[in-house]
Amino acid sequence: MPNTQAIGVAFADQAIINGSLDSATLVNSNVRSGFSAAQQGATITTTGNSDVFVIAPVSGVLSAAWFSGVDALAASDTNYITFTITNLGTSGSGTAAMLAATDANTTKTTGGTALTANAQRVLSLNGTAANLVVAAGDRLRIRAAATGTLANTVTFPAYMLNFSVS
Picture 1: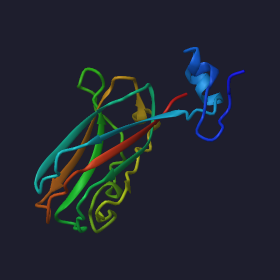
Picture 2: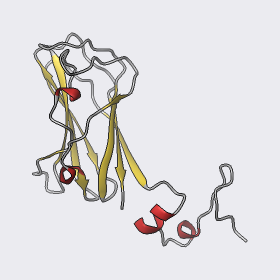
Picture 3: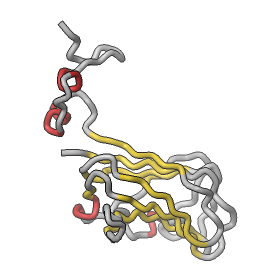
Picture 4: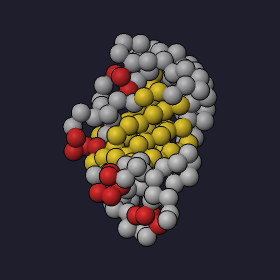
């Protein structure tokens, strides 16, 4: 009889074996009910926009977003980064803002947070549930927009997005 429950690191779920794993089975299974997409971007420059793109791996809802970079960046109300994620859809013309348009997603002194080298930073999601919905294949633009002139670049920026499925 095949193993159908988690035992240490060994796992065999009948839905995986026979290819019938759907979102309902996934939620009721002991297989994690979500997907992640990670992307490393180019160096965040001291001026202008630094964009990276992610393709939504599944239809679902953005449930979490994180940022991490190799370099620290001091908080400043004059020279700061604003993080945004825009769902461009499959046509590239979408405008849904997936992150909250608040200072929490900045490196401002007032309401934002400095970047700590190699530390994970949680990005605040938009409070409008409809803005967090993605279809498999949607193109998501992650932007780090520099206002003013940053004190330094931020190298090896990495982003992690988690999606829940229902």
